Length: 343
Ligand code: DOR
Ligand code: ZN
Image (cartoon, rainbow, N blue to C red; front, side):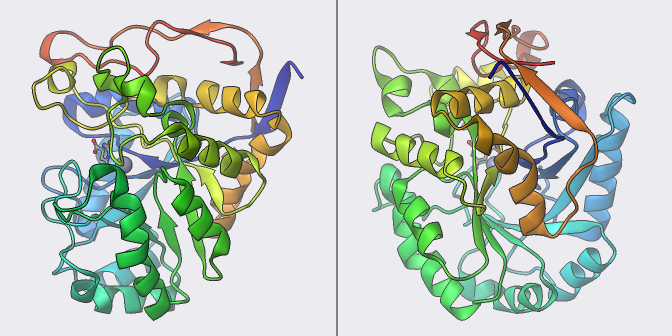
């Protein structure tokens, strides 16, 4: 197969940032995806309806007019979030979902949740109204090794939470382990997962052997090859609970090339090209459309997009850094020639 046409896909996990960086990056998502779930970890975070509307307006203002792009907004859950605010935002169509960051798990998560107990009232309401909870699934216990933080989260946090809220729609975001794949597949509650292109393509050897590659550093951190293969099997295996979410997370190069570098991979410039390469390598191109365009909307209860997008087996070179000086950002796989292109 040298070409594949799919219903226009969506990206169920993006960081579009704000201000100048928003202007720089939004078109890379808008030109490939019809809709995107926008993460709320700005400074200050998007914690309510008012901030979500204002941020949505800034995204739409920054997005070049030729793209038909709909940002789907999320609220940043804190220990003091008012459940009624979530209910109002969901009913009004302003808030599509709620993001749970364990406090201090990742970039701009200091205002995150200290424990599930602190947000029971919110989860109760979300379960009742069918509002999805999007989870950054890592424990922050300093005693837990960074490579084990996702697996420990399943056991310590996710399993008890789901037992208490069995009808709550939950997306375990950017999964990185065979443990998470197994957990999702064994689940009998409305639990799904997004998988990034970089976690499908990169393992910790790529990041650490022969030198440290800061542009592969992200959270949850890339794991060993056997976990990477479990993710590839899950994405391409046809289970409808796995869907596309890039977690594209740009940082200035100055923040990446640092003695204490930022976590995040800017995959938006070659997201679909990277995903389709994985499906091709796994002989699963027939499963690509469901992963990219059907499974996400089905879970969120949204329609599939109208229109199509075509990818062809035509080599394409990923462009160079965007912006200059302190504002420069480096795309994932910069300068590499990829086997597939968006037509
Ligand atoms: O690598 C990451 N970058 N993981 C996250 O959870 C946050 C993100 C960011 O905002 O930079
Ligand atoms: Zn993210």
